[in-house]
Image (cartoon, rainbow, N blue to C red; front, side):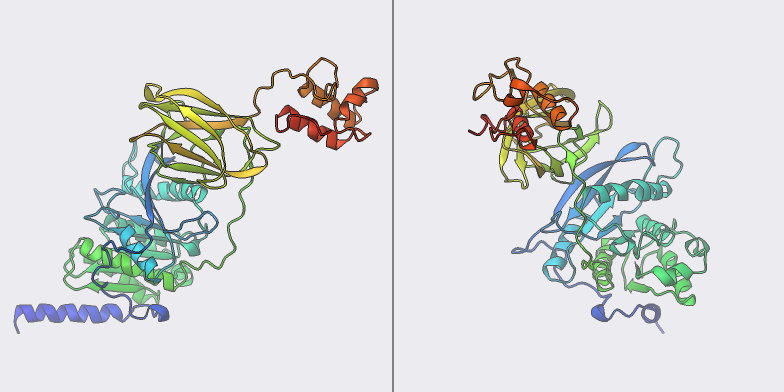
Length: 501
């Protein structure tokens, strides 16, 4: 028997063994399999998702860390999405899974969504080396970073489900080992785990399954272990596979004949994992829509990075403390949901910086092209961290709205924002309309002092008499009541310019 024939026989026997313990997934019975030609190529005539750069503060490293987020075609805050945390290998970065010569994850996902093989899903690729001062092993420290910092950040910024049934973890090489280590020891947080070509950092079986596999048997919805047969690291995933087989833990063990330690294995692994997770409930979107965010007052300072949605911008460390949003280009925007403008606002104030010619902040309501209530011009300040206040008047805004800050200007980066707030426009003393109506204290102007007197009267804390009582009846209906109070407040805020005749 020739050595070549013997080698092929061994590979065939390995493959037969591997499929003998594959989970039976009825709606994806043909998987795992090698993807068809063009699965990772850009196609015309289909919708495409968006890959955005983000940065978040990590208490695991005491620093701001980068990540990339794939938002599927048609991403909307009116829906909720499942999230896959996808990890790179040793020496890599958050870019590897989206790199043209690497994972092309966004293209693979776009094509699967267009084909109807998976529902829209969010994919997050962090930097899995959470290194820093005093940290011995950045890859091991990444567990704290992911669980305590990145996942909460994603769940506070994007419209995602926050339960384990809608959260997955997968990765290649070192990231494959991390997928084993993090996923199997945090089954309260992950129901779908996809280690591909896992590396020597993979924990020992007794650490991955400290209870003999009881939790894994109960909670795992998908454990997909993949590797190439020519990969020298094949033994690490195989060891876990053999343990699962011996302990009746459902899993899929898939080997690619002749596959090495490269994207020729990792991309097909991802293609299969997304579909197999879909088949067992990863993107079950029958749950109720996300709760409406609690309204935030427009008149209290709101940090710019506390947005609910965005396009194009990134967070960064701010010299004034905390973070700011930056890397803003023409057409980018940020969204702040459920902002309460009360009875009206008259002025917008933002803390801004720019090392270019600056740009404009269009203040819009409820959509990126919604009603324009003000435009704030920002000039160059001489540095991206040289902060100044920028103001503009606003009008036609009251009640609760989603606030869109849309950025316009020339080419390149325009400006940074640290925080913003609204306020009522400064009210100069104004002659009383319709004679003395509204001038309750008789000082020749209508202002907040008159409003306070009226409120005290209505609360029976201090009763008006004589001329003051007549001037408080601003709608002239013969009584002083809450309607007069509302009209007076609207007049002071310049929502109305005269009292009704």
